[in-house]
Image 1 (cartoon, rainbow, N blue to C red):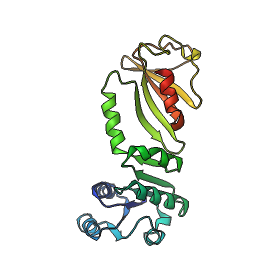
Image 2: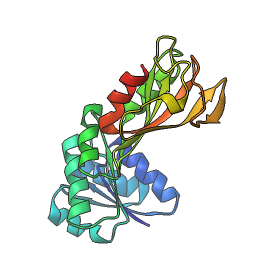
Image 3: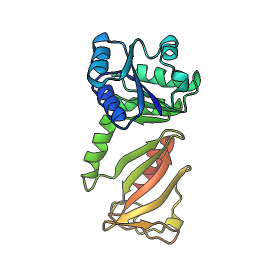
Image 4: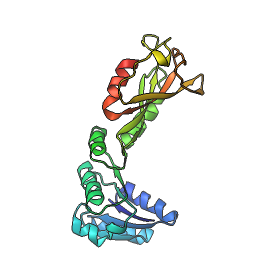
Length: 217
């Protein structure tokens, strides 16, 4: 597999090192000549100095034959442009982008980036899962369709408490296929009665997450 990594900061460095340890062919694009030298000297990886968002640099990297492009710079704007050009101009099958500001996640989803990684969002989700009464935790987003997996907790005040799933009118483009009760997973059916403290694993489009939260909340 041929992977192009754009950005040779700490994330790009360790990503490149891990990919090479797995036997992948990796090329790194980086503006800073010092970082390029570090990648080549310490990792023995192929690296070129240049702007990874420019078509000429991408062509130099042979990006048209890449299986994956990972844009992991410290700037969301650059990561978005790199991913868009790789996808639209060079037809790269898979694009992965680092998001530094979680508020930009919906933009990446709307523009068709295959996958995004937000360290802030990951850490926040882990913390929220440790708060017993936290009613809404975003678990995962599938960027291909702008679909997310969400954990919701049924509180005593929730209108869903004591109701069967068949009696609930969920918002459009949402579904609740699974719940966790007493630490055990339960597949949800129409006659499943929701109980206080049930943790619901829901699926919803990005646009409908807030509607689902309000409905269950």
